Image (cartoon, helix red, strand yellow):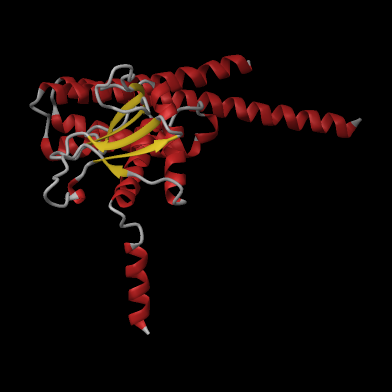
Length: 134
Length: 152
C-alpha cells in the first residue's frame, strides 16, 4: 500500500515539474516573440544597427531556448531553420544594409513577419498545453 | 514562383527515389534543351537541363532556371505521349504533373524545413543527372584509383 502511494506521489511530482517546464517554455517563447516584434519594427523603421542587434539577440536566445526546451516545442517548429534565417537577416543587414530593390525589401519584411508569427504560434501552442494540464 | 506544400512533399518523395536509383546506376539521364549541331559534336558540358524517362511515358527533368545567375533549381515531372512529340494528329500534348522550383541559397532563408530539404536534394540530383548525361560517373573513381596507385 505504501509502495503504491509512493509511486503515485512520484508521478504527481513528475507531472508538476513537467507542467512548470511547459509554462516556462511558453513564457520564454512569449518573450522571444516580443523580441521578434522588436526586430520587425527596427526593419520597418530601417534602423540597421537596431535591427542587427535584435536579430543577433534573437539568434542567441533562440539557440539557448531551442536546446533546453526542445522536448516541449510543437512538432513542425524547427529552431534550426529559424536560427538560420535570423543569421541570414543579420549577416545581410550588417554587410549590405537594407536592400534597395523593393521586392528584396518585401522579402526581408516578409521573413521578419514570418519569424514573429512563428514564435507567437509556438508560445500560444505551448500555453494551450499548460491550460490543458491544469 | 510559390510551391504548395503538397507539391513540395511530392517532389521530395520523387527526388529521394530518383537520387537512390541514379546512384545505383539503374537510371540514366540525358541532356535536354540544347541545340544539337549536325555538323559538329554537341558540347554537352554546357547543358543545364537533364531528363530521364520512367515507365515509358513519364519524364522527370531537373534544371537550372537561369543558368547565367545559377540561383534557382527546378524539377518537373510530365506525362507525355510516347507516340512522339512532333505535331502529328492524335498525339496528346505533354501533361505537367508536377513542377517546382527552389532557390539554391535564398537571401533571407527558406520558408519551411521541407523547402530547404528539397533544395539540397535537387542540387544533389542535378549533380548526379549531369554526371550520368555526360557519362562521367566513373571519372572520380578512376582518379581516386590512380592517386592510390601512385602513392605506393
